[in-house]
Amino acid sequence: QVTLVESGGGLVQAGESLRLSCAASGIIFSIAAMGWYRQAPGKQRELVATISSAESTNYADSVKGRFTISRDNAKNMVYLQMNSLKPEDTAVYYCNSVVVNGPRKLTSWGQGTQVTVSS
Image 1 (spheres, one colour):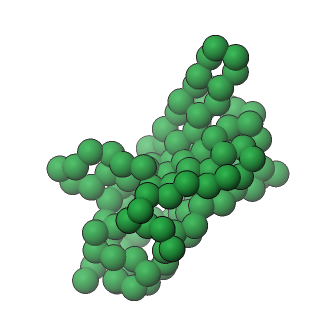
Image 2: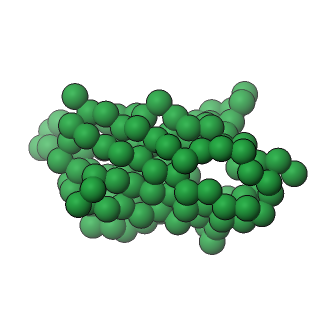
Image 3: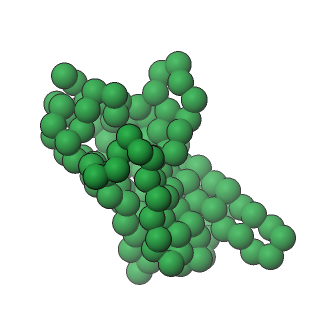
């Protein structure tokens, strides 16, 4: 069973930084594509950043230059460093994993961590 546990959310002021962490278990982490998504109240869940097993990264335009996704395969961890936070970054942030094994694709989600940015 895949388990993803996020941590590091909180309340900060605009311009400050936070680092989110996601601990993964139950998967072969090194072959998993990992990602961070977020969902603000009344809005759909949206992609924030992804990192492949080869460590190629992809970011939403709204966070490029401010957020950095990284992974530590030795620790089964993925991180999201968030700098220069804005009130519009306020959302629940979810960790995501995708493992493709032949014709099978396993997608998993964490329970989410709240990030609130005050102006």
